[in-house]
Image 1 (cartoon, rainbow, N blue to C red):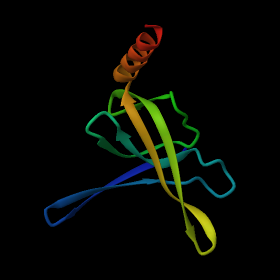
Image 2: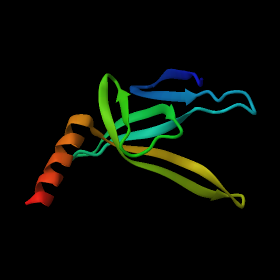
Image 3: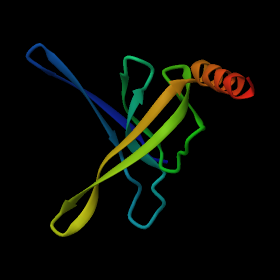
Image 4: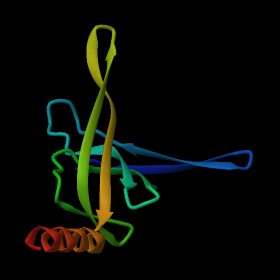
Length: 113
């Protein structure tokens, strides 16, 4: 398993949280990647950078800081560098699980009427 390492750096009065997902040795399966997690309820709120499994899909539940969130979208962005496309950002758009169920209920209610 990849290990989560957090370091708190204090520069002047600004604090920055740096999160690293240590990769396994070469040739082994890499199970966790850093994702930028954003709760998309208005207004959008950043939940920070989290190390999560690479095979996440829409509709799955994840626990972040003791709360359950449902994944609405998974975004992988790539950037062309030196003639090769390299990953530049991994992002998860999430909703709180209660809000997700409520949205499904209202969508179903509107379709039936």
